[in-house]
Length: 168
Image (spheres, one colour):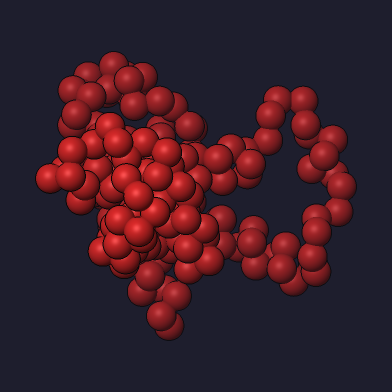
């Protein structure tokens, strides 16, 4: 593919790619970065995709880039075993920011614990106890797909509740 045709490709799909990224990460700057990473990855392997499949292909790359970002952001937040000493160090930023962050985390945990069944047990095991989907499915004697669907719906409920709180 020539540079000119790739520029047309970017022009055609840039809004779509940005929207996919933004819907997942909810951060304007990060969505822009992920969109750039998406097009860079697409440029490297565009010859492997037939032109009639460009749209779903570029959306899948964008979604995967956003998922990877969210996973890495979560991994950076979770401390590894033996890092308890690091928790004793003063946090970056002001005490007010630290208080607000703790309060926000407590509010999210409260919302998770208040979810109705069938989302309650699944959400506690997944979000608070950090169990993998396979383990949750075995423990609750539910199919893996059912657990995934319940987690998806629980996330929607939590987003809606927390969004309403932020609007206030």
